[in-house]
Length: 389
Image (cartoon, rainbow, N blue to C red):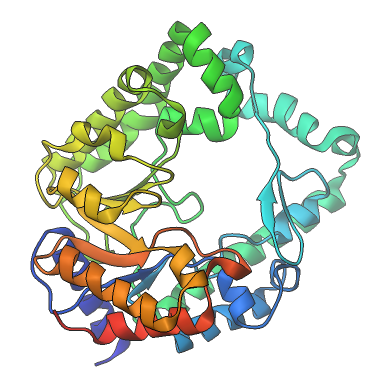
């Protein structure tokens, strides 16, 4: 079987699983990010700005662990562009850790100004604040160097896409690889524009302002997405899913807030996908189980929840209509034995995947050295690739 045929076979495996069709084996989506670097014997600071070394780390992972798809092929955490532009980035790294400094691009008072002209706001407010005094000192040479690094980064992304093809590994979904997923308004408010603290306060003190912002976001940012979905011809079998959505902001909300600021707009998006019979992956960072009731009426085949903190067996009882991705805990991969990990992997496959509706994966993004032990990861990957249910 050549790589093109293998890729098509894997896509079909994912599509069958998410549509609750019985599969010969359970597909394995590797939720692996920077852990690959440690497993290849390197540190983060060695690989974060070295495309050649990053590729070697990715190839080491792909050659060692049999999987069917992977979250990141080394393009998620490269710092060439930001370092070429100078100090002031929100993300930072050392030999062991990648992190992000707390930040907010706006205040509640400046949200309207941002929406009126996001580009102008970025140039006049965000960038000067982000880079401080060095902003005025960035001359043409800095910009040329930065754009050169940006082009190198884009070329690396395209190169790694060819690596994926060579290994017969399909992409997760056709969303923009630089962003990764469709972003509802409240997710952007929490992650970038206001931050957790300001959003939490605004939901209580300025709810009407948030309503107005979200409605405008819907009109200007989401309506084009709805139109694109409606114009689609159905599932795109070049990918494992037709779209991805990241959910994190729900963790800061009670049900009343969720029903006001999140659910009406998420429901509209999901309903639009449902009209076209598309398959959607939702990565639910934190826990989603307390909001299970909102998703019970959707047909099988629409939703696959990638669970981070929720118990997958409890989740299956609550939402038998929703496919599950995940299950394998980083705690077990880090602290268990290979035998314990394989035993749990077998239970996941047997109890959740025997009749379809389950995709094996790690619950959290493998990012740090202690997120998994190599022998445990190897034992699990070998088992899942060979196990027939």
